[in-house]
Image 1 (cartoon, rainbow, N blue to C red):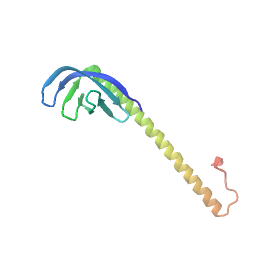
Image 2: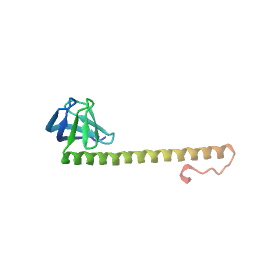
Image 3: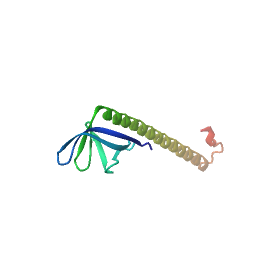
Image 4: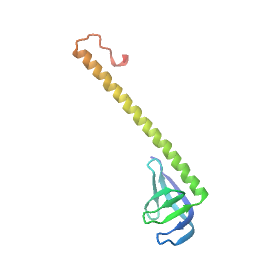
Length: 122
């Protein structure tokens, strides 16, 4: 898994609706699993509509560089996730073909056919 630590900044709105300007927070992103953690509070954050949201209801409207950095990480995470899924699908397809080939060999042996092909010939 890939983790990325970054510092993001922007204008925050606290849970009490107080506005705090120019806030900087250190976060860690595991974009493959779509997880963002605030390193100060250890809260798991959500990212949508150009802002990070804390479980308490507080949120941070990200500035342009921070948005671009998070979007880049999220894109990389989607690509990595697709690669993992493609590998898993390939593995399942190979496993299924091996099971089918073994079933054909077993059926040929059970029916008494003497010219059963070895695995490499399939």
